[in-house]
Amino acid sequence: MRVAFGAHVAVDDASFDLAPAEALGLVGESGCGKSTLARALLRLVPAARGVVRWRGRDLLALSAAQMRRQRRDLQIIFQDPLASLDPRMTVGEILAEPLWIFERALSAGERAQRIDRMLDLVGLAPAAASRRPREFSGGQCQRIGIARAMILRPRLLICDEPVSSLDVSIQGQIVNLLSDLKRELGTAMLFISHNLAVVRHLSDRVMVMYAGRIVEVAERDALFAAPAHPYTRALLAAVPELPGMPAQAAQGRPDAQGG
Amino acid sequence: MSAAPEPARPPALHADSLQVCYAQGAATLAAVRDVSFRVSEHERVGIVGESGAGKSQAFLAVMGLLPKYARISGSVRFEGREILGLEPRALNRVRGSRLTMIFQDPMSSLTPHMKIGAQLAEVLVHHAGLTWRAAQLAALEMLDRVRIPDARRRLRQYPHELSGGMRQRVMIGMSLLCDPALLIADEPTSALDVTVQAQIIELLRALHAQSRMSIVLISHDMGVVAAIAQRILVMYAGRIVESAPAGKLLRQARHPYSALLIRCVPSLREPRGERMACLPGQAPGAADLERGCAFAPRCPRASARCHEERPPLRALEADAQVACHHPLEP
Image 1 (cartoon, rainbow over the protein chains, first blue to last red):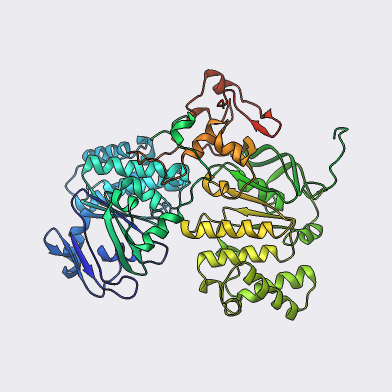
Image 2: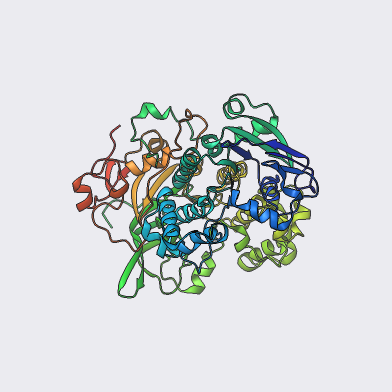
């Protein structure tokens, strides 16, 4: 996939590639244009200029109908888990909606099976299907959002600050879930965050944005070990560390669950 | 109280068996269960725990900001004087001047249609009886103090013209105008980027050093609390489960929950494992009944006893308490 556009000041001349089943982290402070970039890829906001090459076609040049057909492979989850879900629908109805739109031929039984399987994949009980979003916690709502995005097995999932609204103790649950889904379903992911420490766990490569421009792209380990751009170095320095903490392993504390 | 001599100055805040409950039909939900603590003069105390632990509820009760139908019991003494149930006029003299609170979302605390300068000046006119002119000057000084560049221009701006970090600085400034004895900061950085978080915490530290006030900082993020607290209280399901000096807690937490919260702070230092550290499941809500230790379902060390019998908060050392049947050993 190849993206090249110089839009309005929000995103200026951004170009990058994303390989199939690759996880690309996109990091930068609020206002740097990362969310705008992600939305422009999916034509949720208009790009002034550029090309988004996806499976041999330019997404920005498609008609509305053609673009709609592509959307089954291009999904997104957002920062505010509850706000992304229709409060009047049950979880089952929320998960069924994409199937109604893109896989109309499914029988009721097949649909129910897909929903059950998806709930299981994201770690929710089958009983969740009959409840409404407000009955769930922030972390659980994010799982519902992920289930809705992944039920069609999209080739690309964009995650726009998916854990920033969650308690730090729960953030790992969602990051690990995304990591598992990427491995099991082979989905490419664009993971957007203002916190490098979170991006570190999921990404194969990391892209840093500043004031609408991409200032550095590197393999994950290389970026963390030897950041090239001064802004990347500043972002790394800004990650708060617990003062004077010895290496975790030496303390014999109980291991945090990887759950 | 006991026969021990009272300290020369009362603590800034002394809560005793604070309880906050809500009726829901026939049931009672307990948001805060039997919480007791002290905040000394000029002390920085951190309150940490996941969402729903009752941290905000406890301090909203202190501030008298809970709805009328909240059932509050226990005692809260501010500078030696009981404030729970204080009649509104007396409470309003204290609140906003000597006892202040800032919240996670400054946008909801700032009036959107009033300029920053006017909002700040209003506090001084109301509480300190300043003239409008004098109040505006003091407001300008305060914006400088909270390190807002180009303060004169900012005074004339509206809240929406400022970034999230700037708005939080304005809120901090507003809370300091009347030289408070205690500032309560409830998740002041949770809505901000990590880069800005560090600046705000550093600002709070500096302001604290320049004054005699105490600070209570509430957060779900142990990393944020660790950056400012001298003493840390860990809350879970409405109760305090551990209390210790910050350095001691961070080096060797005794309660498994505290240790896990420390483990979950995203860090660049630890070797990059496949899994990001986290706690499993989620914290119980106010509605869940208490049988045994509330943390037992998620605790890696839970025994049968933990599920049956709730561990009381007891002193391990002179300055440290823990509520656990099997505390971690140093």
